[in-house]
Length: 254
Image 1 (cartoon, rainbow, N blue to C red):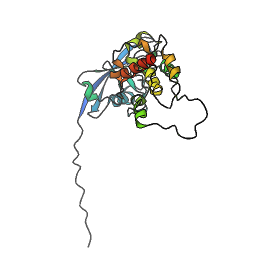
Image 2 (image 1 turned 90 degrees about the vertical axis):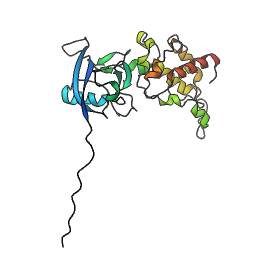
Image 3 (image 1 turned 30 degrees about the vertical axis):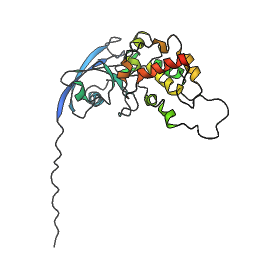
Image 4 (image 1 turned 120 degrees about the vertical axis):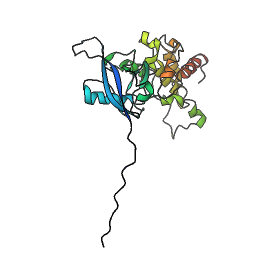
């Protein structure tokens, strides 16, 4: 007797609805016919409700114009590579859902402000990282090598927990009006990373960092506009951290 196998039932998973979305991308390509003049290109692609701005940019590059240039790496909001201005706000393209930025109208995509544009949405990050390096983003200790771990209490770790979340995307720094008008300003990200070490109980370089940030282009240039806190994709209370560094500068309590 031959056994029979029933056919598997057809999949009942509903199809994800699609929609058309237009991206208006600011272009800059010195080697093109436009030379040193920036210009705008519009692209319309088919997207789904789960798609992010980065997905739309991928479709543009892969299916429409391979010369469109932008940075991206992990695509999960961790590497910070794809920070850009989307509808006038600094965001990570990989975390911004198309449906959340009104896809019924063209979505404006531009490079972040205050840093030299290399091509299209790619900026020169060297001035940003130069400020980061200057605040000594590493533990500073003196004396002999420790015989064991440098232990911390939960309370000591909590003191700087918020500022350990920085992914160096430059969204906060490039949202700062002071940074736009004064390229010498350290910027919020450098101060946030100084905070992370100044308030670390294992570190002995707080005085050096505070002296660096006491420069005329340092922490006192902050005007507390809160742009940086609003722009941070990791939810860091950037303005609060800057205020705490200012207070430490005066009180030397850290």
